[in-house]
Length: 182
Image (cartoon, rainbow, N blue to C red; front, side):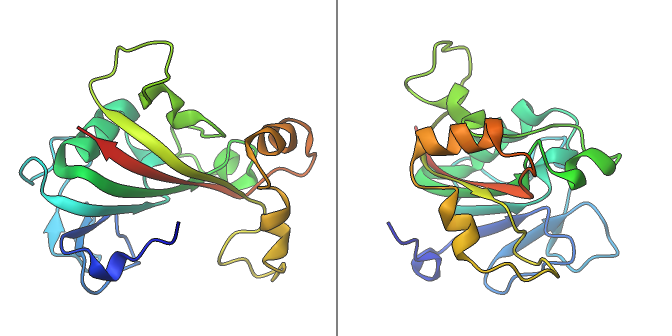
């Protein structure tokens, strides 16, 4: 399924940092960065319920104090059937380990606790995880690995889990696409 975000009306770039995106509401805590909204993702986000069609969060979720609270907030401000795209360092990434402000680690099925099939139904928000992708070579890598390297690790869920467990060199990032269920 291709994702055409250009047709989506209300788009949020959450934790935008230096990645200002035209056509999005850019939110960051750092007032030295260009953004339309300055707010702390550790607190209630300054948007009404069910406001955004699309939320993009790139390497910011691992920095929050309470990841469950922030995920609940993203769910709250996203419309039913809205899409949330998340990029975070994979738990095996050297960047995950060496950056002291990282508070959480992510892997295959990290968002599984928020799905209908979850063993525990203790979370108030629900998602359909429509895509998970292991990223061996970061999108902005200076090493320039060919794109098929990432394709190789993402044949299917079983292969991803196998690679995540046994691949010795680790992965730079992991990508999630979530569909909001309300």
